[in-house]
Length: 271
Image 1: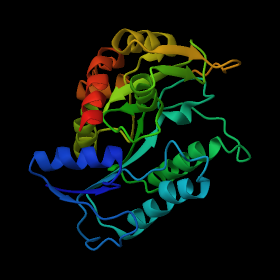
Image 2: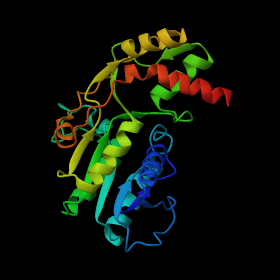
Image 3: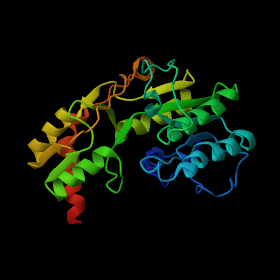
Image 4: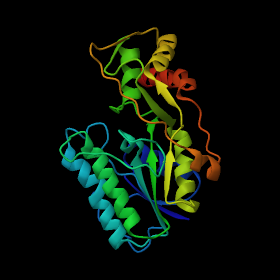
């Protein structure tokens, strides 16, 4: 079976590509700006291109990454299916975290550039009216991407390297986390045989800074505080009933993974 992974040099894309190759699948991995040499035979496409933690510094790059390359594939490529990776960040300010939620965004807000560009990519997918063009909204995916600016990876680095972490959101701020090694096979399953057009890929459980901090203190002995005036940031619970019912997806808690994550980072430091 043939797959095309766009964004295979990134964190999620590289893990998905490695998972597919381990399965023995044929995997085409063009560079981000490379013309599609075999656009007539892309097979199952996983669109993993994205700008994440640094989108505020690169807003136009975020729009280009989330929309422009996608339009080229939708209009010029032949494929069996296409799975566009969006983000559960679009639920910021929404009344619920279900796939049917509606959103409040402002084009004047730099913080909303990410959400608007991801939602534009989603809209382009749904506008094709092809049932095999699907969207997955991923929550905060964690794993061994130790060069990442993403929150959890950065906090673990600080806890181990400096022994001190200052959180920029308050103790009760909370996020949904899901592990990369649980995400890899699920995305491939959705691409091959998903019955719906939109899926939340998340744990379905919000973990507070307080609980995460307690786990980090236990493992690293770090000093962990909250910045003065830190805001309270919390998203609605992400509804994962669709992936649970269709694929039996029940990921582990990030709190159970903290020990292994810290051990992995310590090994990387020694390498």
